[in-house]
Amino acid sequence: MHGDDGGRPYDTDLMAAVTELGTALRELVDASVTTAVPATELRAAAAQARELTARLAAEKRPPGRLSPLDDIADFRQVYNMVSGVGSALAPPLDVRVVDGGVVAETAFGLAYEGPPGYLHGGMSGLVMDQVLGAATIRAGLWGMTARLELDYRGPVPLHTPVVLAARVTGAEGRKSVVTGTIALAAEPDRPLVEARGVFVVPRAATVADYFATVTDASGRPTMPGRPTDATKPGGAR
Amino acid sequence: MHGDDGGRPYDTDLMAAVTELGTALRELVDASVTTAVPATELRAAAAQARELTARLAAEKRPPGRLSPLDDIADFRQVYNMVSGVGSALAPPLDVRVVDGGVVAETAFGLAYEGPPGYLHGGMSGLVMDQVLGAATIRAGLWGMTARLELDYRGPVPLHTPVVLAARVTGAEGRKSVVTGTIALAAEPDRPLVEARGVFVVPRAATVADYFATVTDASGRPTMPGRPTDATKPGGAR
Image 1 (cartoon, rainbow over the protein chains, first blue to last red):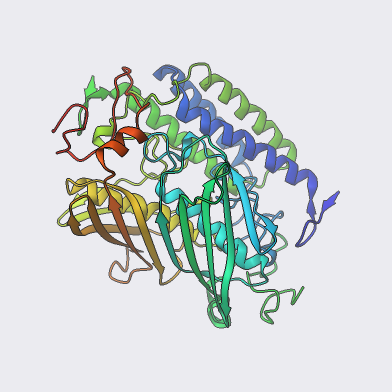
Image 2 (image 1 turned 90 degrees about the horizontal axis):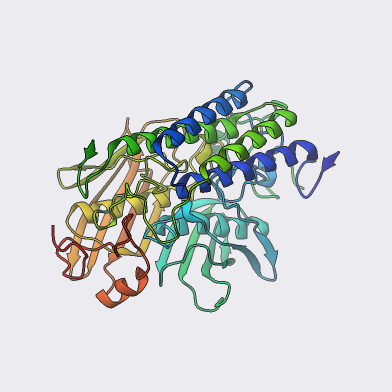
């Protein structure tokens, strides 16, 4: 079985297993920050976690080699810390294309707490960087973050449905400007966080330099890029 | 045994156990994004992780009640997603006071990857929000993030020692302005990321409203605040 929801086909059984482990680890992280078990139990849990680590570390990807589930030329990254189904750090955000931009819904758990009961202000920046970047990619553009501005209008409560949205407001040459917001799902028109990002595609020589040692799972060189970039391995799609 | 490195004394045995579990989970998260074991092994690991979750979930803190290790009036949060020793999401950053500001050193692992081989651009924002905020707190100020600006001069490589620094450049009334950088430890004077933050102390009534339901481990109301704030439970320190 091979999946193909954009990018290169992948092993759907492996994707399901990576997703299952990502979900289990996310629940474990949440349990670890809400637990009130005594120190002896925490130590026993730590010992079990180390066993689990040894089990997973039995076989490792070589440095610079992407997961067989990833397609960096299509921006698919299963371990992305915001959107990756396999990342214990990610909510994970499922960013969808809508008319004129992208949106994602989530509710942030206690692991992302800053001020008591509210989302860490920096986490708002982390997720908005990802959502703004996704808006450029879905618009057929791409770029690395050159500037990110965030205005905080009010704290984002935890355990509460929120909606993140972004759209490209300008694009010229290698540069894209994107704006977005975080708001309560119940009050989508009252932004709690406003974000503006400038994304710039590095020059071809710089891209080649940055990603010189990156290969896909089969060992072939690969790098991110706009769909129309002649320098992109595999060519235009 | 009770620790006292600022803030209220705490149970050092519990702190050591929380730190041990945090470290073990961080290693587990790293193993989960670098592993190349087959799907059957990933599923077996997920089942083990769920057992571990059940073990930790046997006893939970009530919502709004801080960990007995935390002192929010002193900004000590063991599960903080950037600096918390108990957080599997945190590097964790150890932010130190230096002449004129704060610094922290770290090397980011693969769990924080954005473009292949480099730090997620949003993660730079997350950590700098924390470091800029720490600079205000260490200067005897405090505030919630009102604005955050980031300029990206070059990608931050993974697995490479970096230094994060910040200092307060202006403070007037309830507002503080802070600037900071991320640079390679080997080239501290060539910033890869430049950050500027504006932090504002909410009015007393707003603070009381935001944190109305927050209590310390003993059930007493508590909230963040400047050391000189009359509204701060426990008073000036």
